[in-house]
Image 1: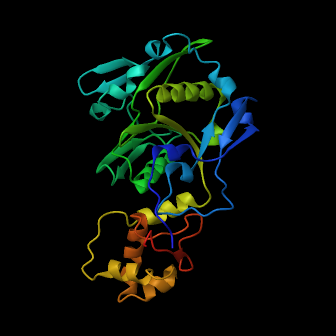
Image 2: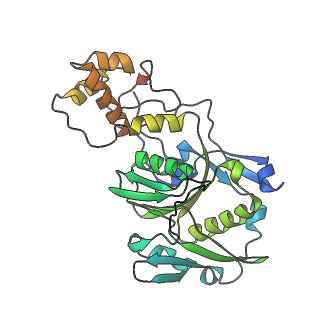
Image 3: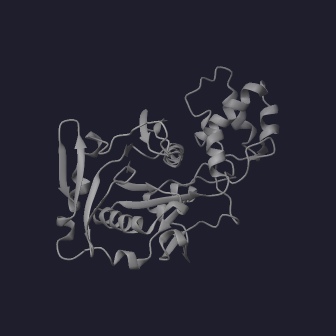
Length: 307
């Protein structure tokens, strides 16, 4: 039987850190936080964002390139955009800005021949569409919706202006995820696309976020099989009616012991329809599975946190 674990923002930083040299960083040594992807399962009902993604952590030498002298949190600024005007605030006041009233500081564009693929993704957690600039960002939004703890997700939330030993720079993070009492700033960049010029921007964003008690995350990859599993589960994430009581049948079937997915649905009164309800229960964390394994008839389905 699998016990339930609540999501906390601190859990976003829980994975192990391993250092390696990378060519995409121009020879600079970087550090990559990666979960132990081979030795442990990924329980669908209790996983956090940091469990799902492979975070990218910059070497401390990059942090030293930032100008963090006296009053840096006042000199560094963030520009937000609202429907009526731009709002510029010092970094130390980031958390006091009414972020939910803002709009993306950079618009989303579609044109023939562009190399990235922008679009809109609906989130059940917020009840609205959210913009993304690439398929990698869309995957991040899907993962956020699965975790379900966000009260709001803002795309292109603000433009950070900061200074380094070489002069002034700016950076617009991909997302600001608002959680109860805190927030997570997220950049999405596949590891092979991260360049040396990106590292100082990531370092500055991390410093700015930590100045107001927020968390910063660079999502540079995913644990094995996770995206395939989330895509399969998301097909049944929207609200469903259950006039035949199949969801209760499914929950009762696994009350005493785990069941194979195929066996579980076959033992209901209407197996063909029960399949869709089983996937729905998995998405909404009322049943559990190991996300690192394929969702097929042989997949083990577990009860969630019952005494």
